[in-house]
Every structure is written in structure tokens, then in C-alpha cells.
Amino acid sequence: MRSFCANNPDIFHYEVEHADQIGRALQTIARVDPAVIVINGGDGTVQAALTELYQGEHFCGRVPPIAVLPNGKTNLIALDLGIHGDPIKALERIVEIAKSGLGDHVVQRELIALTDGQTTRPVLGMFLGGAGLADYILYCRDKIYPLGLSNGFSHFLTALAVLASLVFGIRARFLPQSSHPVSISLMREGQLAGRFSVLIVTTLERLLLGVDPGDSRRGNMKLMAVDQSVSALLRLVWASVFGRMGKQQMQGIHLEQGDTIRIEGAQSSVILDGEIFRASEGKPILLRSTEPVPFLRLAA
Image 1 (cartoon, one colour):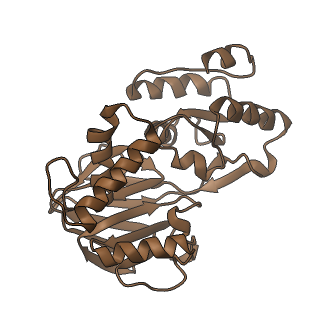
Image 2 (cartoon, rainbow, N blue to C red; image 1 turned 45 degrees about the vertical axis):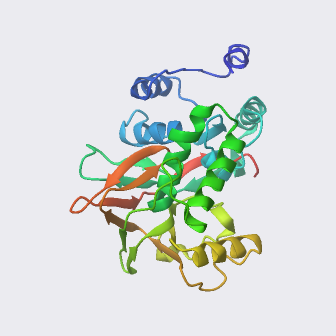
């Protein structure tokens, strides 16, 4: 990546080693008035950059379109924008688009603004996993990734461990633990409460498991919660394989939309694009959707 940028004078490249350097990087980048901002990293890097972009005011409210290269452990945001495969080839295509005109490649996406009563300012992202899903992500990060295996095989081992602990009821220190109870409130849409094996809140268009985006008038954040039971997981697998997610109501699978979502529970974790936050009794996590933000999509 360094070599490619060095050989392309149209690219202004700024490399950081730590997240706390992103503010200074964007302050410098704003001075060159870029046509497109390209973030090279996984979803956690994108989350940190988005938070600084839209709260640092480095671009005086006129932030250019954002492109994301798939170069991290998780790249859901890049995939949603049609950017996958070799990051260098993706960057070559982005440079071509910037030279020929952005045109139809600019799309609008809302962000999730998260506050938890402890952060000094909202944290912005696009994909949140909670309840059992957050526990599985943390299990993969803490127990499987250190083994040095490929991302795909690490995720496969995590799935096997989840099946062993949840479906077959096997309990062991080296397996994921049962999720904590959590309460989810949606403005105008009521409340969900219980133990969930999967909790997802996202503003991405390409939703997991083929869920239809739904009616934006009900809210820009899409929520999916799956009860912690074998039958609900089997329905989830069946519906996703046969493209039935969102086509009809299914017991144990909850699909909702909203502009404001409140998550509360005892020692329940949520992960917003790689960063961990804790929900607890009396200290809920509050999610709000932002105004639309411009992104660059490779496929027009």
C-alpha cells in the first residue's frame, strides 16, 4: 500500500499507528481538499475515523464521500459499499472514479450514534452486535484469533464452539458462555426483553442473512433479535438459507426498525464496529440514527 501510494501523485497518504492520531491526520488531510477520503482498515478503524470526521469539524461540515478498503479482521462496511477483494485493485478503481467523476457512485448512508453515559461524545458506526452475538465476537477475538489461524477458519471454529455450547448444551471454560438478559426499547415500537443469541442493529443496506431493508418511515436503524433457543436458531438458519428472512413473522425472531433504540441489561456487552461498550442496570446504551452521510460505492 505504501509503495502504491508513493507511485501515485494523486494520492495524499497519511498513516497512523494509533487511533488517537486520527484527528491530527484528518486535520492535515482537510488542507489538501480531497475529492474522496479512503479509509484503509477494518470496521474498527472506520468507526474511529467516522467519529472524528463528523465531530471534529475538520471539513467545516462539507465532508467529501468516504470509501473503505477491506483491510481488517471485519469488513462489513466495505462489503456494503461493493468494495472487496484486493485492496490495491480497489484503490486503483477509486482513483479512476475520482478522476472521471464521482457521479452515480455516491450513495447516502445513515450512521449509528452511540452514547452510554460514559463517553464524552457520541461514537459513530454502522454495525452493532449485542447479547450473545457480542459474546461470540469477543470469544473469537480473545480465544481464537490468538491461535494465528486465518480469518475464515477462525470464524468456522467459533461457529462450532457456539453450536457446542448453545445447541448441544455443552458447558466448558473454553466454550462461549450463556448470554445475559437484556432489554431493548424502540421509540414508538414497544419493548423486547429476554436472552438473545443474536442482536444486530445496523444502517447497512446489505443486511446479514438477506433481510429486506424494510420501510424507512419506521426508522433508519434495522434491528434483528433472535431468542436464545435451539428452535429460534434453526428457524433463523432455515429462513436465511431459503431467502425467507423478513417475508413472514417467525416465532423467536424479531425484526424491527427505529430512529432511537435503548439497550439495557446486567453486564451485557455490545460491539459497535469493533469497539466494546457495556450496558448495565440504570446505565443504558442509547442508539440514534444520524443524518445521511455520503459514501463511495464502486458499483454504480
